[in-house]
Amino acid sequence: AQSVTQLGSHVSVSEGALVLLRCNYSSSVPPYLFWYVQYPNQGLQLLLKYTTGATLVKGINGFEAEFKKSETSFHLTKPSAHMSDAAEYFCAVSLYSNSGYALNFGKGTSLLVTP
Amino acid sequence: DARVTQTPRHKVTEMGQEVTMRCQPILGHNTVFWYRQTMMQGLELLAYFRNRAPLDDSGMPKDRFSAEMPDATLATLKIQPSEPRDSAVYFCASGLGTGGSKNIQYFGAGTRLSVL
Figure (cartoon, chains in turn cyan, brown):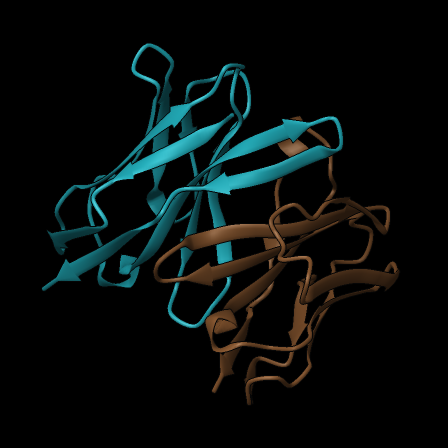
């Protein structure tokens, strides 16, 4: 079964520093991978996705992620953190069954950005 | 601006009461998902529908939870009777239900349920 593991439930960075949020996946088939962001008291918003093709995926708000099959990873990065990036980030893998697609989410990583 | 609408946003109820949560998916989306978010378990898939038919509800406690889609514009999640352990944020999401680049789910703002 497809699953994801997010390393680090809390990550703290200084404003302007590199953001790196880690996600490793487990899948017996080529995965579809996603990063979602959740701001306080809001629903989840798609940051970016990898389905096929280019392994470096660019998303909204300056985030990007690279699919590395050899490392079974899909880490999320941003060169320079802004205060507004403070939120909960979820990595997810698409589950396929005979009935269709659903998402299996990681436990989430809470990003804190300090001045 | 198309979005998934969930009502109510907040619900406080007493143990044993019936709770109904509603979701209006984005117009044209044919799949609807219900998730539950708690601190301990994170995001859990409860059920999902395609073209109003339930495809998978294995994540849902069958004895007290039920999910339906009376029509294409409304999905409901009911808990009867409710228990304190049901306290969580319940999210609805909708999508086009196909693979590849169309396999994106759009989330509502959630219903925060507190069962006392």
